[in-house]
Length: 140
Image (cartoon, rainbow, N blue to C red; front, side, top):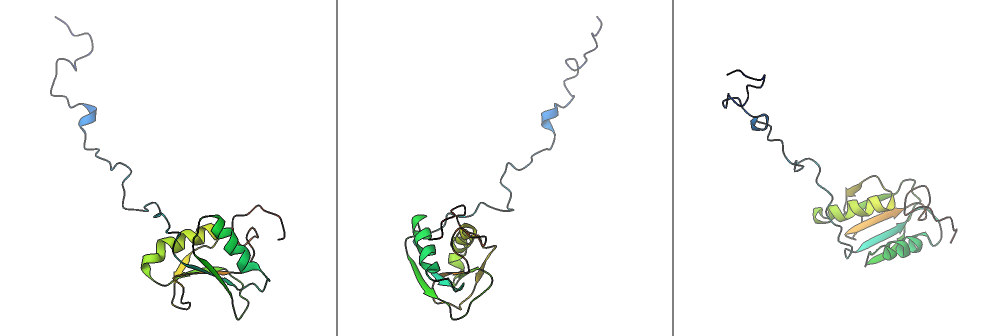
C-alpha cells in the first residue's frame, strides 16, 4: 500500500509544532508595571511660583474637580520657571507621579523642601502650555 504524500500519520514520533520550548511569558514581564492607582486623599500643597494672582486657587479647584480631596495653597517667595512635583516619603511616590502626569510635569522628585506630603510647584494656570487638563481657553 502506498503513501499519498502525507507520512505524518504513519510517523507518530515527529514532534508537533506546539511542543517546542516556546514558553514565552504571557504579558507579565517585570518591566514597567501599570502605575498604581493614586491615593487622592493624600494631602497636596499647590505652590504658586508663577507670580500669577489666583493661580494656586485655580489649580486647587481643578484638582478637587478631578477627585483630589485635600488640596491647600500657598505662594512661593520667588518666581520659578519650571513646574515640579515633590513628595516627601517613598510611600507617596506613585501618587506624586500620577499627580505630575495629570498636571503636565515630566517627573516627581523626592524632597523634604516642603512639609506637605506632596507639593506641586505651579508656574502656569491650568490649561496653559505648562500642562494641566488643557483645552479650556477661559482666562478665569
